[in-house]
Amino acid sequence: MNAENYIKLEFPSKSCNEAYARTAAAAFAAQLDPTLEELGDIKTAVSEAVTNCIVHAYPDTVGRIRMRLRILPENRLEIAVQDWGRGIENVDKAMEPLFTTGGEERSGMGFTIMESFMDRLRVRSKPGRGTTVTLLRRIRSRGEPG
Amino acid sequence: MNISTAFADGRLTAYFAGELDQHEARRAMQTMDELLEEYLPRDLVVDLSGLNFMDSSGIALLIRVSRRIRETGGRMWIENPGQQPKRVIDTAGIDRLIPVTVRNL
Ligand SMILES: Nc1ncnc2c1ncn2[C@@H]1O[C@H](COP(=O)(O)OP(=O)(O)OP(=O)(O)O)[C@@H](O)[C@H]1O
Ligand SMILES: [Mg+2]
Image (cartoon, rainbow over all chains, first blue to last red; front, side, top):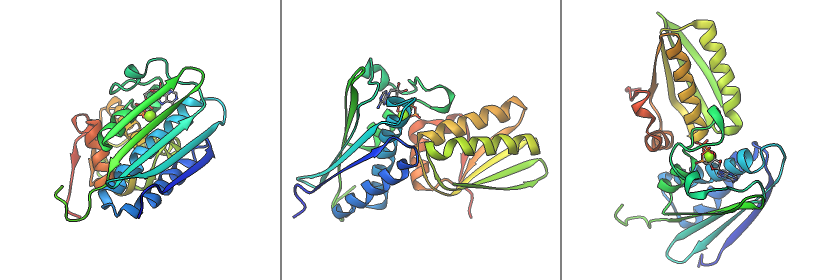
């Protein structure tokens, strides 16, 4: 019934949109009947991905961010967050815990949090062209063992 | 997000409420800087019981605040994080840097 449902959202890289993006993602995910903890995980991962676009992809400009959410078979939610900003030189390095180019306002834990809160994290990036972060999370049916 | 405070016997408690993300973090850091300057506390308790959401921007903020208080010889605790902030704190591993305690409310 839910198969192939999706939404696409596009918004400017303004920090006031962080709360909007994670709330929208949680509202879409609600059709999979997630637990509060699963909803919290989804909001957290989306917040990390969108904040990275705002802070790192477009450090000095306001750019475009696109977020796509898709329901896949077996109660899985796919979230893709895309920007057309600065891109990442070395993705493996960027994904290491504590690695940051952001100074003391950042902790370098964003990718680590996305990775541990979701089932899968994929990062595709081209320097100067932009970055797409794809997150996958299966939502357990109620009554299914944790 | 909103920060309210209580102060007694050298101990400042800062109650964080609402959602702490990158959008809120800069103003929150400024508020904490001002509070530390004003009260010069020996102990700082950051009570997260009213915080509904926090991401890595909150981690960076908590680390910065703990550095600042240690510079002046003070100590810091995190108290009563809810489920989502607790998961972020655990994943980031900052409980090794800043003790996290859960008090009965
Ligand atoms: N969308 C992006 N565009 C360009 N660079 C990025 C993007 N996302 C991440 N990066 C790079 O990867 C690094 C690591 O990202 P990560 O989210 O793990 O940590 P952070 O954003 O630096 O700190 P935190 O997320 O803890 O606030 C960033 O410092 C930045 O250099
Ligand atoms: Mg980040």
